Image (cartoon, rainbow, N blue to C red; front, side):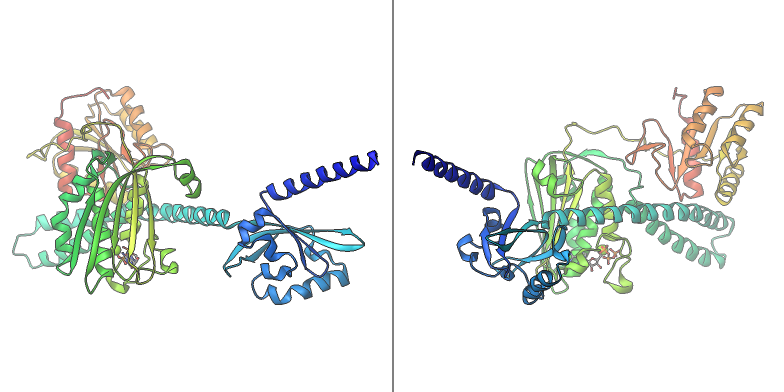
Length: 521
Ligand SMILES: Nc1ncnc2c1ncn2[C@@H]1O[C@H](COP(=O)(O)OP(=O)(O)OP(=O)(O)O)[C@@H](O)[C@H]1O
Ligand SMILES: [Mg+2]
């Protein structure tokens, strides 16, 4: 008697223990008999599927599956029992599961079997993998954008090398002709086309995050309000422009011209999405992105951000469109759009260390949410000197020109020689070092491409400076490599000429640098 009571108490305890384990498991556990009738349904399963356990026990497990599995469920089980093929056992399978409200979700399912009371039973462990799939999808997209970005940056680099001589020689030709020369018009057409190509290249560079940034400590509100007039003109009379700006907005570190580019692109798209008029709202606020937010958004670092939200009441977008809008050359505007607007917005935001998200549904408008990291720095950061341009653009100094692209080298050499400079030319770093070693006279300036074979421009200039400490250095590139920029920001003291450039800009920058009092690098 006494012994029997004890075993009963123990059995109770064992059962309670089992129940606890069963109910506190993170995974959904569902057990059924050999006909698929549900016998056990744990707490996690209740939460995930939206059924109370009491609603499912006695029902067939097919209620947890969407069609076509639902109708096939009996056949699956019967086949398994008949053939013994372990098709449904032991393996982690990816399935689609169905909640009580009829909605479905991706799940991982693991089925095992056991025998009790001489009957076969099944245990299914179900894991909802919706969140994981979303993160994976975000990651895939981010990687895709990364690789398209690299490609766009590369193309832009080559294009800038091509555009430099096109624009440059067009300028030289024009200056040779009199104002009345009929060829002026054709040259103007060449220039116009090349200028437009340079504009597209700039946008591709922006997307590829290769733009040179000149970030400043900025109150985004100031930038927004500064564009008020331009924006309302752009939007036209039928679109209302509303602001909702946080008056205590944190500061952020961003290139003011780039934030303007961002706002303008977003406003233009909003205008196009509201042909019959509507409302564009620009909001700013301070936001702390916490660890949980970062976990659900790929590549977000938690911390304080300034949010800039631009929403319209236009025709919106479907999921298919949303999946591609930041890709370069994706446009639904036929020949009216280049599809580079949002691509450059994306690049600028990323290059500034920020994030961009978009929310939209067809006929429900669109909201673009941009986050820029808060900066603790105060005041205006010293700008790379954009001093008054010198009047004189000629000179007699000696310039060492290092550029591996023959067309660009030829053009630069020609412009500099025509202005009176002595030009020593090298196509690769080794040649430049040789020249510098053997040349008897002084070399005042080296004009040097950033990306060169064998050695980058920065290392080359350091080598040259070792033997000629008074040498001044002007880098040129169509492309901001980490060699002279860090995350798109120019290293201190670096002089940089963006390709493509015109003869005038080249001569001005050269003169400016030569006239500047000597500095220790
Ligand atoms: N606010 C919006 N509402 C609805 N659709 C939009 C909105 N913004 C962008 N889109 C869609 O995304 C596409 C890509 O936009 P993006 O700005 O990159 O290129 P585009 O406007 O077509 O051309 P571009 O800006 O180079 O002139 C657009 O063609 C449009 O279909
Ligand atoms: Mg656009």
